[in-house]
Image (cartoon, rainbow, N blue to C red; front, side):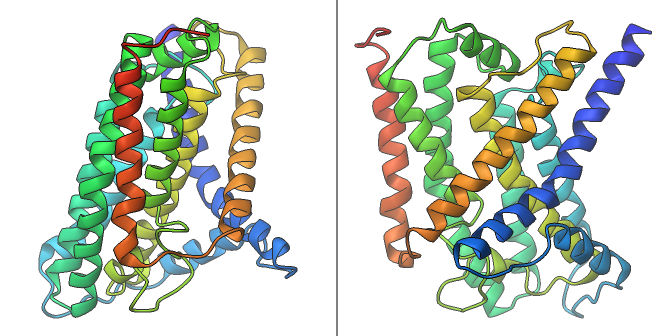
Length: 318
């Protein structure tokens, strides 16, 4: 019975992550519209858009290989697994042993690599443009992400997310400048990886600005729905990661009862809402930067993460 209960909790986390993803994207869009004094789309509009795309037939180019049809499923699966491994309402779930920061970085990198191959498969100019820009951003974002992982792992003594959340929640880490630098680096990487301002504009199809949209122009129907859902999952993943590592309050420990798990779920939804509000406010306060300035922006995350790692050896908790 205990194994069944643990399996049910793990499945509940996977379903919760998938169910909240369109709502999170719709909430960000709604808040941005309100800040612009517009009514904006309904909160559930993303669900309707995905259902409409799933109901349509996928149109595939004649020059596309069989990989073009398979890649959307791989992208979605890798991203969903990575998002499900991040502790949301409770730690030490059934598959928590595999919820390692390095594993999550590897899953996201695999999904990104597959998406770039899919963009190149058809051989269009837009696909090559988007893939080249994505490769440029990834070549800087992944090292920054790994250095952030090393910083957090050195402080917590492990890279396993459930253990990190429990360590941070206990207060043993104290106030560390290295963790503050790691947080800023993670936020910059999240903005770059999810295609948000100031790196990319998720609401445009202009040739001179788009990165992610250029790679998915050839997809339609259920294939496009899977790719768009995977991109939305990536946003939820990074907000969940920030909440798990740096704001782990409310998360239920191992062996907690139904009450603690319920409180953990409510706290998780509240943290997602707060992250969405901060994202909408941040995106409304600045403009998109030029493409040739993106390496400087993402490179700053790498330098901050490296500095945070070095400061561990010369700083102490305040």
